[in-house]
Length: 304
Image (cartoon, rainbow, N blue to C red; front, top):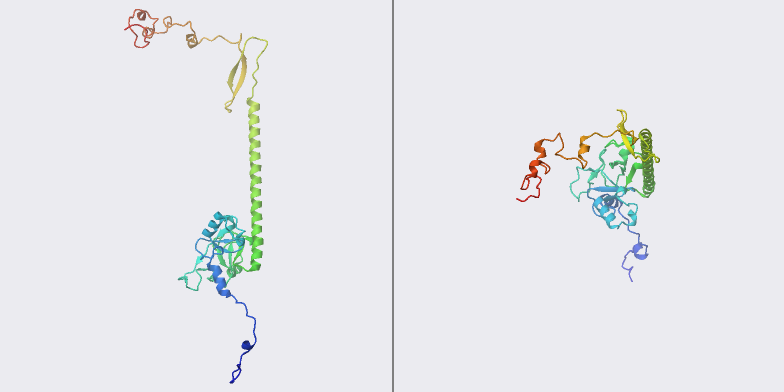
């Protein structure tokens, strides 16, 4: 059957060949990476963040995944928001709509579009993004956009290949180790400063105690009790020195009239310094004794 009437069969019609696997379009794959979140595969919307490996994410998606603890294994290196960096992207003025093949962001230095054809880098110290070509041509240790200094381990290649991922992982580990060392140094400095301050305070208090300390003693053999006498020190110091004084023959009698009035023997009617008007307020006065009604101040128990 067949092969008659002058037909010429082809080789693929006579011999069965293995089908070649479908090959991905590299340009479309790269464009997809630069326009979609690596976590949720949704379109990138500001604010956009990058991880230490150079992958791009929507910040809202990262926060929701951290709260729900639903991060995949590909993003296991993200434990908190400190593991991602807010990146500063320059908008493309030629970009019009989503159907446009041009990228919404460009390099702010030489104007290359972020379509995936050109390599882009991000500085972890400040978050500025520009093309790798411009970064190599400038050759400075300061960011061209914000003039902030950076180190070699702060350079992160965005959406890099497998070799770039290995390099980014080592740089990420270096940054974490450096942060730990800086925290240790800060703690040691705080401890050293606190100990030095405490030592100065103790020496100052010990000096004040040595100058202002006093001992209060009482003579057990004598029956007289001991009192305390407070004397001010020199005008430069605000402290006072307390000295013990024995109460007995050395102590002079008190001649204070107010102290005499506090005794039970005192009477207002016998006080020569009191006036008659003041004496009339009390029941011991002569006019008060003759009174047959209640007094308006002292309210004596007389009948009205």
